[in-house]
Length: 117
Image 1: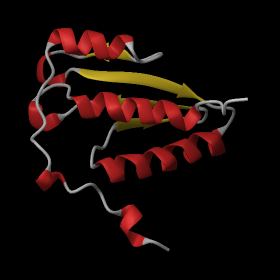
Image 2 (image 1 turned 180 degrees about the horizontal axis):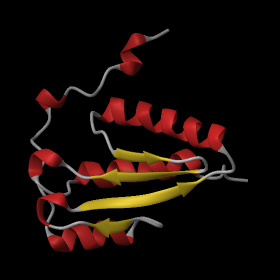
Image 3 (image 1 turned 30 degrees about the horizontal axis):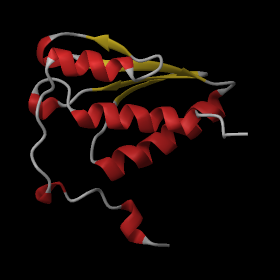
């Protein structure tokens, strides 16, 4: 097994994350399907509830999202239930939302996207 695929990105060589402006947040949210803005100030976040047929599918999604989060070094708050998972992203170190939150939200959506016919 290739262990390098399990290593997070090397954030030391990337520019620091910055908080997005209100305009950037509204623009980013408009490009996401089903995500909503929650909280305010340093607690502002984007959140979406993903629904599944059963617990097994829910946990499969959680495990896949954990892999994404690990590789991005950006970990969402999760609320896991029998047939749904609430995913909440924010960037604690900037006290708001960053581009990484929206990138990870798109990746979460891609995990449940139907394959193209």
